[in-house]
Amino acid sequence: MSQVQVLSLPVPSLVGSLETYIATVNRFPLLTAEEESRLARKLRDENDIDAARALVVSHLRVVVAIARGYLGYGLPHADLIQEGNIGLMKAVKRFDPERNVRLVSFAIHWIKAEMHEFILKNWRLVKIATTKAQRKLFFNLRSMKKGLGPLSQEAVEDMARQLRVKPQEVREMEMRLSGQDVALEANDDDDDSYAPIAYLSDPDNEPSQLLEFDETERVSAHGLQAALASLDERSRRIIEARWLREKNPATLHDLAAEFKVSAERIRQVEAKAMQKMKGLLTAA
Image (cartoon, rainbow, N blue to C red; front, side, top):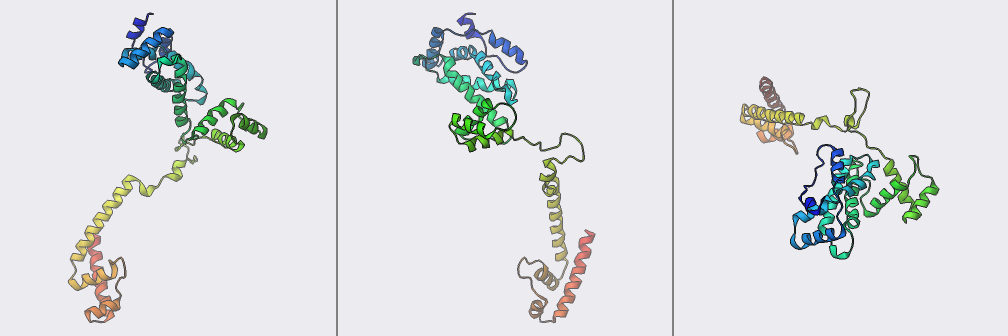
């Protein structure tokens, strides 16, 4: 396949069969150093999109090979390849042909960086490595640790010396690696299963319950206003002062002094008004 043919090839898609994609990219020939430099200069100087496409297509097999090394994290091979392809495109954009370095050597860093970011975001629901030092420790510990059992103190100290970190940091990262995600909902219909959704949910804040509560409040407020409007002025004043004030509700003696009657008379008026309002609210 000639360089002209490579230039005319579209970038293959990962949508569909992964095996077909891998077989396709493996048929694309690698460029010679001279072809690579010429295409890189065309991209840099002329912003030639066809040159960029040729540089990307000829290195897609490299991404596939690197992605195989990260299959142990349990993430889809196609997703790792897709993230690596993003890193490859970033490398092509930043590649300087005057540095006398082959694109494959320059691109490996960018390809791995995108895969690392993808793994750290998706390997656990909760991020286990946020700083640059933690990310380096995460991948080194994964590759250096043998077996599934906990590390001995001697192994922890040995790794700490090799990685130039504190033993405590190695132990902490080991604990994060051994942690497991917990499903929010149970995987079966067993009534005995007790998934977090059972004790994290708040039935009082369920949307339909909130709507029902708001509607009940609205209807109740409307009914209360109608019931108050049915009272005479003195009865309404007594009810509002005794029961509808948020602060410092009036006492029977306060209202007795205001209306110049006995406290017992205020109590009687209040009882009669409450009885009338209760009848109206019940009927509504």
